[in-house]
Amino acid sequence: MFYGSKKRRLPRVLRQTDIKKKPLKDLVLEALTLADLKKLQKLRETFDLKVAAHRLEVSRVDVSNAVIRQRNDAAQLAVAASVTRQNDWDRKYLAPLEAQIAAIQTQLRECRVGMLEAMFGSSVSDGAQRYRRRPGVELLARRHALRAKIEEFMKARPTLQGPPHLAASTAQPKPPKHEKNVKVAGTTTEIDLSRIDSARLRELLERHYAKIQEEKNHLTQLKARAAISEEETRKQARRLRRSELQKQLEKVPICPYCSGPLDELSAHRDHIYPVAKGGKSTLGNLVFVCVKCNAYKKTMTLRSFLVLLELDHAVVHTHLEVLKKDF
Image 1 (cartoon, rainbow, N blue to C red):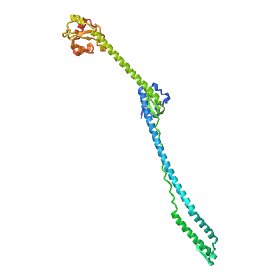
Image 2 (image 1 turned 90 degrees about the vertical axis):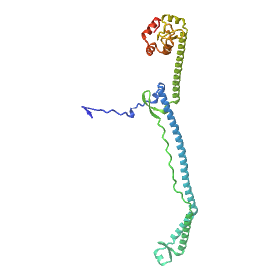
Image 3 (image 1 turned 90 degrees about the horizontal axis):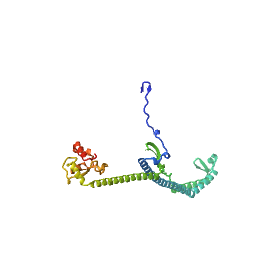
Image 4 (image 1 turned 60 degrees about the horizontal axis):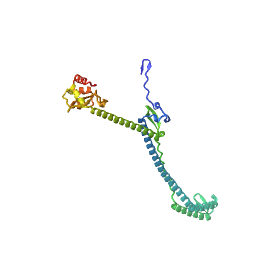
């Protein structure tokens, strides 16, 4: 498709060759984050399990192939033994008879006769060949007897075992792939898992975990210190003498917040700016209020408290100004 005079270029599909192949020697383990280190550790452990499984499979195949080789060798030996037995039988029983038959054949060749002698003389025939009668009949009879004897021996001859059926060996399993594309440090990297130092990886992970635990302990200590500081602040507030209540009642004889009744029995000290948010136990930040207001306010700021109970901001501010409080 064309737009005007320019050809539209389709987006190029990401190919495998576009992945940056970064050798492991350039990958600094110390510079990786905890998440990347845990990812590499998991991949290395998985790779080690596959390698162990591959070794077991190789051992199993080796044992199986050894058994197959033993069976094949035994089958070949059995065939060779049957051939040896048959050869020994032939040398012991058949060879002497065949030697005698060969000698008779030689004698028969010596007593062969021609056509005229066969027509006019005394001869005996053996197929197309004729021999003189006197030695020929005896030689042919002996040869016939020897051949019959050979046939009898052939019936008792040891059988020759056929060619053995040799089993095929099992092929060795393929080793697990040790190269894997992993995204670490924001880059897809081809890593040789077999070259990852497991001991070094565990050491770095232990350092990270120790650092995290140290930070947790430090945070716990800070929280403990803050709690101690808050408790000290509240102790200072409790040391505020009751005479301050009388001075406050002389200026504002009611609760400075809700304008309700206030006396020595119902008066509670309150930090105008809460201790939980950093308020101090100073006269300018402490005021006596009724039980209800103290219970509602808790750790809220004055503004939040007034909004929650819908109290008149101007009246409260006037009371606190009369008492010369900081708010």
